[in-house]
Amino acid sequence: MGLFPELDALLKKRIGLAHLPTPIEKLERLSGELGVTLYVKRDDLTESVASGNKIRKLEYLLYDAKEKGCDMLITCGGVQSNHCRATAAIAVRMGFACHLILRGDEPAIPDGNLLIDRILGATTAFYTREDFKNLPEIERDTVAMLEKQGRRPYLIPMGGSNATGSLGYIKMIEELKDILPAFDHIYCALGSGGTYAGMAIGLKHHGISSRLRGIAVCDDVAYFKAEVTRILREFDEWYGITFPDDLFNMDFDDRFVGIGYALNTPDELKELIRIARLEGLILDPVYTLKTFLGMMQQIREGKVAKGAKVLFIHTGGHYGIFPKGEEFKGVL
Ligand SMILES: Cc1ncc(COP(=O)(O)O)c(C=O)c1O
Image (tube, rainbow, N blue to C red; front, side, top):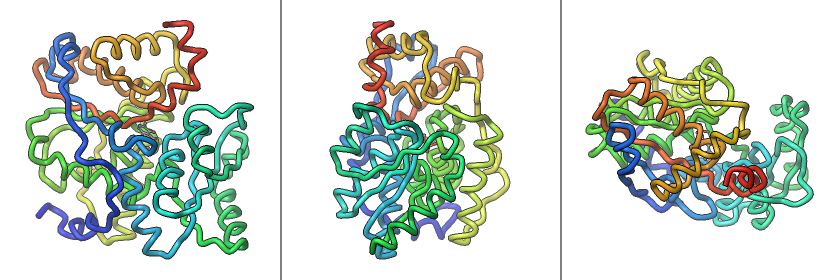
């Protein structure tokens, strides 16, 4: 039993959807280059069409949706949201309808994640960046409209990041608990904060002292401190689990957002190509590439001791490569 006994019952409220456990692989050449022992947790292999980190959150969100008698999933994100694509795929598998609230213009030809959303039959509504700022209102109106049509919608927040979704990454730490104590550092992307929140709780729950570091791919440290704090507090409000103060000390770095969320410089894409050709590992340009660049920089800066054992969480996102064919053309 872990530090928070109430968690053990909550972790059972799950529908098995992902192919678990995902493998862990050593990156031999990059380990040599960086002077550490670097492993990657292949959460890009959780599934195919629903691949990546979101399916772990959806295992818990879908359990809740079913328990509440819902028949439709509503969620939101950018036009190229991995979370929306994974939700659309799981909706079909579980016999739910799916509606996506998307930020950005509708492209003339759907590509990447949006193409998969379309193939899976999710309905979509597009909002400008300006309008999307009123997301709570859009969500309220969408739920009301669908209820009027006789649906019983279940609203999943951006990135599946609330206390229920985060249970998926507490569970992921359970999957790793026997080997994790040997790791000094764990790195993950910060997109909406749920992956980090779940892992931070899981590490505390199992008394594992590996240092968890989050690299922001959008926004800044203050934003993610607020978001992860909100998720941690939801455990208190929804499930009556109060976490100790030290869980609120987070290790975030926002220096690698670069020219903006989902935007890449040619140099970043060149690194994606270099890593792919060195290790046969493909990172996604939006999340895992920037996180990997952040991790390498922290190692070079000495934030990670020489010879340390490091685990990088590959959270997926491969479909996000395809809409960037034009940009890759310049660097391939
Ligand atoms: C591929 C990928 N990696 C990482 C993340 C970040 O995870 P989280 O939203 O839980 O912070 C996301 C989504 O935001 C993602 O799609």
